[in-house]
Every structure is written in structure tokens, then in C-alpha cells.
Length: 338
Ligand code: SF4
Image (cartoon, rainbow, N blue to C red; front, side):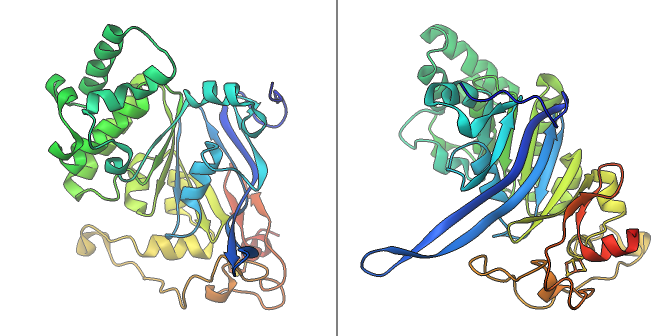
């Protein structure tokens, strides 16, 4: 049995992530020796409270998708721990992990790749029920129909194949599939990124309705801040494998403290610039450095206009709470708070 943990997290916390690390080895030469590591996630800690949506944002390649997959144990971690309802996920034996996976599901960005093109979608939705031996065949079909209705699809859709649906419908099927085993927690990995803007709102509203109805908890991964603002209770910002900032949605959108978050916020388009007034766009200089060889000190320092020489390029800032659960990893914030 995996260790049951009673310290640090509160009863409110469904998921606790402690110092999560995930490196991907780079192999070269005839002998395929490991010559370097892609440091996709490099010591990330956060909690997700029951019933909330934690939005996780950052540029592509910052490690946010790897966080989602690693915490579900879909890919092995390099280091760190993840607790689900106080139980150490990485210490679980196969059977215990199989059981806990019923409660932790994922919605993929591209549901087409996760649906078997030769299988009617009803059977794809039912797959988890078959694997976990839940119900009779009749009960499984009734459950599938009920799930399709919950995501605003028709009963007859169960007999159709993935190619017969639009992108938005396929994503709703992906949601139905994730709900089949009655999970408590869902990692939604860029679930609307590939959809038209008009369809994005429909899918987001379905996710929010289901959360209210079923008491679900989400980790919602996205690169679009407007989408995250719509759905999140709290928002976490990642940069090059590290956490930069985490706070409640209102706090992070009204009072972003980390220079990287400020730059991301400045790039959000304003719906009506004349009415809302203009916003100074912060242009980040240079490219995102390679995660194989990230900068020493603060990973963001080569692109930061506030970088403090001799500090930011030497020592890594601590990710800490500056009040009311507003976490930031930045020497400038530390200096101003002092
Ligand atoms: Fe910029 Fe320094 Fe803060 Fe990093 S620690 S974001 S380099 S001010």
C-alpha cells in the first residue's frame, strides 16, 4: 500500500504536487548513450483544492503538459511526489494505481488521436467501464447514452464513428469518455486550443456546467490567458520548467507580480481598445532558452528587463507566498517586499 500522508496539505487539497521533476534523456551515438537531459519540469510544487479549477499557463515548451501527464503517472517522474487525497501516487502498486486512475482522468487537446477511428464512439466511451468491469453490457450502454446527453450530444451519436463529427463534437465525446468512470479530478490538456473561437465557448461552458453538477476538480492547461481567465479559480504560470507565479484568478489578472506574467498579460488583446484604454505591450527580447541547458539563477533572467546583476543570474529565486496565497519566484518581488 502507498503511504497515506497527513501533513502539510489541508482537507481542501485534492492534489498535492511536491518538487516534481521530469527530465527526458537525450541519447546520441551508436550506443545511444545519454549525453544530456531535457529538463521539461524542474522542481514544481503546487496544490489543487477540491472543486476548483487551477489554470496552468505558459508558452509552448514550458513544461505544462508534462506536469499534467506526470502527475497522472502516465509518464514516470524523475523525482518528486504527487499526493491524491493524501495517497502517494508514485508509490502505488499497479492495482492501486489502476483503481486511483478511475478518479483521475485526462481530456486531450486532440480527441481524434485518442479515439479509435474504427470503433463507434459509444464503444470508445465505454472502454474504461469494460477495463474496470463496471456494470452489465446493458447498464454500460445506458451510461454511455447518459454521458452523451450530459455533453449535449444525441443518443444515436453512440453508433457513429469519430470521422463523422466536427472538432467541437469530438471534444465533447472526449469529455464524455473522461467522465465515464465518475472521476473526481480531470487534467484538461489544452482542450479548446484546436477549436474555433465560437466552439471554444461551448466546450468551456460544458466543462463549467459539469463541474457545478458533479463537483469536479480540474487542472486546466492552456497557453491562452483569456481562456484561463474564463474558467479558472486560481492561475499558475510556468516558465522553462519552473513555477513563476500562482494566485487567485482576480489577483493574478489585476496584480501580476512576476515580470514574465506581466509580459503575458500585456499581450492579451483588448476587446474594445477605445473603451478600455490602451495597454502597454511588453515585448520580450530573445528566444526561450533551451531546456537542455537552462540559464543559471532565474531561468527568465536573460529576457527580464528588471534582472538584478549578480543576483538573478547567480541564484534561483524561491517560489514563496507573499500573502493570501499569492506565490511568486522573483528576486525583485522579494526585494520590494523586504
Ligand atoms: Fe527578473 Fe530577477 Fe525576477 Fe527573474 S528573479 S523575474 S530575472 S527580476
